[in-house]
Amino acid sequence: MAASRLPLLMAAGLALLAGLGGALVLLGIGMPAATRRLGSDHGVLMTLGFLGTLIALERAVALGRRWAYLAPLLSGLAAVWLVAGPPGRGAAALLGAGAITFVAMYVAFLRVDGALHVRVQAAGALAWLAAALMLLAGGATAAIVPWLAAFLVLTIAGERLELSRLVPRSPAAQTQFVVAVAIFVAGVVLTVALPDAGRRIGGIGLLAMAAWLARHDAARRTVRLGGVTRFVALSLLAGYAWLAVGGAAWLAVGATAGGAGYDTMLHAIFLGFVMSMVFGHAPVILPAVLRLPLPFHPRFYVHLGLLHAGLMLRIVGGDLLGLEPARVTGGVLNVAALLLFVASSALAVLWPTTRLGLPMPAPVSDR
Image (cartoon, rainbow, N blue to C red):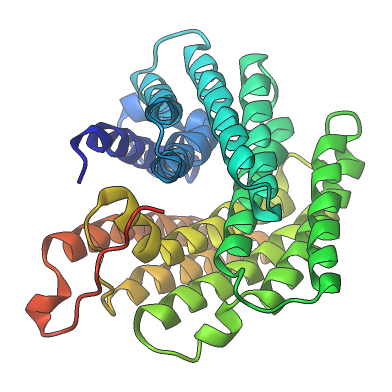
């Protein structure tokens, strides 16, 4: 592994641990007094501190320019700032500077390849920048959430479009994808002036994107295969189902900034969809970033199953039925699933499956 990437990965790991600590605080779990303030920063730590740093690092590796590593460096420093807890809006300023670098990376990508998937991901980069600027201006969390969702959803949708580009599609199918993305983006932008209408339009876009991805993604075919291919496909298909749930909740609750519907929307998108994508892409993307193989192991199904079981318990038992123990237990299971994902991935790198008599796939080269 390139030594220069290790501090960036450590910063992302710190953001993850701090974000999970904040999640336990929000669930009402007894935590040390020093960690209680992390509850207010939980969302930013998980979306921009953890995922933003990892995504920017992966894109910097793909671009192959030294200046591009400034984006994950700045977002990683922002995570450290939030954990350290100094006063002021320094973390928001660092996230904004990181976002500017991230957008510049996509300008460079677009000069090489102006394909649809690159443009969709570039729109996601702009959403990160918008979210960071709103944080810097002291915007309310509920107003920033649509932009954080847009950053992650558009980045992932563009990535899936790129990775599935060999699947034959009609011109009508590509038009449907563009329309779905356009509706979602229009809804997010509209939330600035008309939060309720914007959220509901964005929900329609999310439903359309989930339907398109579930129908046209290569996962529908590869799920019939075995090994890591089936694991990735199951992760993706489960994620698309949760994206539809999140879109339906967004359509139903509109600009509501609390309550069961809002909780369902948040966790269906950011946990059910996004983390399913992280779990599914890890065996493919992480080797390119780490320059180390991440061999698949059947135990990966444990953290995947735990994620969805916890989310089902939280949303069905907690949000829909109003059972507080179900909400808390589901949330704790989700935290456990993410910690288990990190531990299981590290174990796979340190003790490859060849020691278990299973074949170890060749490392994935940088794109």
